Image (cartoon, rainbow, N blue to C red):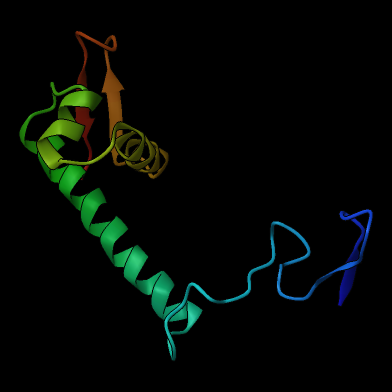
Length: 107
């Protein structure tokens, strides 16, 4: 239990608020759902989006990132993250400039 002295006329007892931004009360998870199950679902979704981007660029390497985002109905920042992952894994290389270049897909 933590005492807070925000009110000059009384003491406020803080009993359910996490002590730091990094802590979680666990209330966001549904009953019986483990952290591993939640992670697995997000990984499945992320992997399918990565494969969707990879497939799209395989069929048309001249697309820009905003065009990819529009075609796949994803956010630009999400596409940028996926492209960074693919480039880091050596599966994707950019050749040429930002506007006039093209993507080289490595199988």
